[in-house]
Length: 490
Image (cartoon, rainbow, N blue to C red; front, side, top):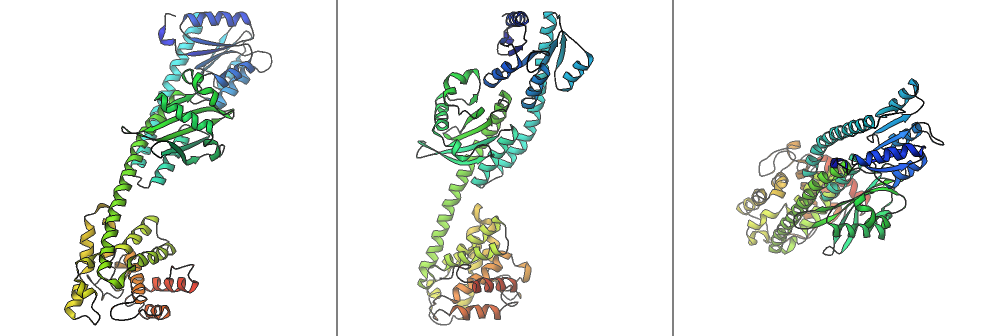
């Protein structure tokens, strides 16, 4: 055992001649290798199904499956596992076939032990270089992946993207992402990927028990491996060939658990696979935590702003619920117009906040029962600009500024505050203009009773091309005609 650097390398010896197995076994152990011995290809397959192997030294001609059959089986499952073939009946055709199938080298009997030792060293070095090349290639991919994760602000999209990349990069047959709730006492399944394992598989008690055992060890689980076999093997489901379980951690806490699985008749995950997941999971943990913080801050801002909107409505008893109703209408219209999810969200919150500038308008003007004077109307007309200024410095609401600012522009250019027209008015503001006018007409005001819905629709129709975008009015009318299932008419 004088070559200590080999002590973590396992060589599988496959030969039907016991004397050959004994000689190679003794020699390789003296070189510091761990060894496993099989007297036929079938036994070798069984061994590789339960024990990690770093390289294979196999005879070609054996009873049952041949060494060529064995290398075919190996390369279907693990192309990087080096195999050296040996035979006492060498032919050129056999050597060519073996090398074409992916054998690293070819030996003829009788052979010198030193020659075998050198070929094993070169094979392992070649594998290391190949793995480093794969790792480099994956690191390039990981750089792109981490960029994508860092730029994703939707938590559900982030979770699914992260899991999909994990499954793809290490060629897993399935995977799942679970998170803790109730102060870390309960683990619930959030996302899963792959078709070979159902969601029920990841919620089995044995899988959950493996996850809890993992947390106690404070290190990831790679199974099968020498470190994991004794502790974790009793809980491994029978349909699993290999498993990686990884805790998603931040410096403050454990967020959840990533589980990746390969089914029976697949190759086992390698240390390289675990290293890839380590890099990816570390970046994802940071991204997930950041997105949660982002969402919390965003939700708090929106609660504050919603409070402002309610404060505005509290000044005017006739407009209670106005902004909420406008928001509902705008979402339906935006979806029917085919706007993106991001644009729909913008219209939604602009609907809620479009009148926030009225917080700066005198209550006496807002509640005046009669017709406004020109001076009073000029004060009312200031609310879009004031509202835009209120939200402009809030990072999550900056994108709403054009919608709030322009929701009183007219399609023919005679509106306010800037008198822009047609498609120069943001689509979200044009949607708001229709929904705001309809909701106002169908609600009680200090100077009049609520109009019948049919009359309000007729006024929208009369003002197409003037105040309102005709396409949006047509769609609103179409949805109204379809009934309450299309528009949330109260």
